[in-house]
Image (cartoon, rainbow, N blue to C red; front, side):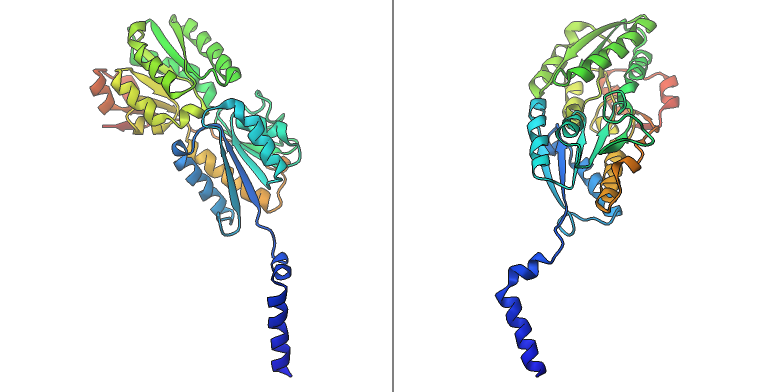
Length: 325
């Protein structure tokens, strides 16, 4: 009798494999929307996966990730966001301005953002401590540090009266906001500010190549998600064309850039992973306060300074959190 029951069970499973599979819970899918390219975000995606793991989720085991990379083509973001919304993914994770496209594409699917901007100012949320609707995330406020980077560039090259600012015209709202803030700081310091615009690799190289003709003392690289993916290129060009430059993240100085001043982008992506995991477990975005990173680091690469023939003032070296020799 027992043998007959056993055979019946095997037969039912063999006859109805789809019915047995249908009883398994569907694996949640995360839509990862990014304005840049995958090769420049390898470390950040790894940090995001680390955050997911801390929340109990491992890609391929109990969660899937669908990546959408705009490759610097900001105009592709609305269609990419709409596609993820149409696919009814469980959560959309996006950086600026991809996060704004995601918010516009859906008011039901949770959106977890990373941004260097003020999330209230750019319209992602109306309240940091209790975000409304389906959006929450992580902010570093690195964009607001543009004037401070100008001050540091001026301290590095005190004899210079002209400083250049590089911005990405593909994100005009951010670019104009940054120009306005840095221009105000330049006037306060008695400096002239020259604006350089570059939205792709060729334009970035052209901006660096033309830097010498400006007779500017230093270059401030504006906060931008596409530039984040090109930190190595930015560092290489600054050495090739002898441009004393300052950017926001340590990846720039690690790759040979002269100075960086800003937060930790990998930590932002780790927190985005943690928040995504919490949402997958049932938390509502409105109950997850926007995480704000207030820690910033000043990093100086003395090896690059020597190569550029720049003498870093002791006042800067004394305040640096990290000095690369």
